[in-house]
Image (cartoon, rainbow, N blue to C red; front, side):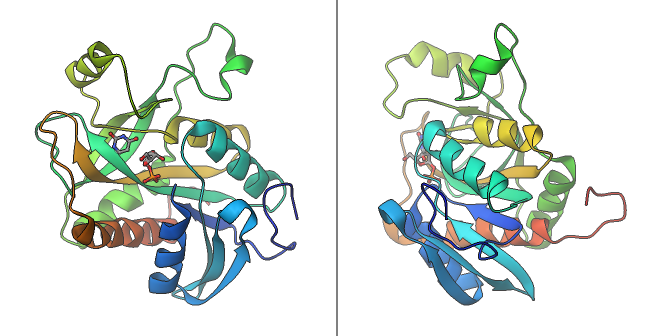
Length: 241
Ligand SMILES: O=P(O)(O)O[C@H]1O[C@H](CO)[C@@H](O)[C@H]1O
Ligand SMILES: O=c1cc[nH]c(=O)[nH]1
């Protein structure tokens, strides 16, 4: 047990899927895992461990924003031995060619700051995805009949942004979408020698102002979970262990 996770030692798998929303963790665990067991509900942040195709998997909420994700990712890695962490999140599209329900695989994430920024001082650290996971996720998406967008995203500190000029610059520089956690996840994974990836579903669009109707979200989110699970356990000889 840690300050924020009630699971006993051994109750968390080496592979952890991290949705921001704890209810998405419950939905994904019930839909995709065999014998899902609730292993955490402290502060309502739900976590479940079960198996997928015989592999142990934990699906645990990370909350909204990098400070929240940082708490859970630190404890999952340092106290429970998580080694592969895949965010399964929603995001807002920042390019016209990116449509509602599309899948984005985040190669890298631009930020103002992360909870880790202090250690880099004046350096602008560039957080990046694990290549083996990224490649496996792209292949998994294509096998499911989906062509993902692969590229840079923006991990924002705020949802209600008072700087529209910044979003314009992100769009101008090819950023695919905005969310609030990936940069810190990639930074922590690098620090601790873990693999990390963010698989995102476009839930709304910053340029067209469309948003995904609630009833349709589950379908898009299911695709994202399938891609994440397939990527986590893909085996290619040259991929990282
Ligand atoms: O759907 P999740 O995973 O929570 O991700 C996105 O949604 C939240 C904002 O509504 C932020 O956490 C953002 O990153
Ligand atoms: O952080 C987020 C998530 C979804 N949509 C946004 O615009 N921002």
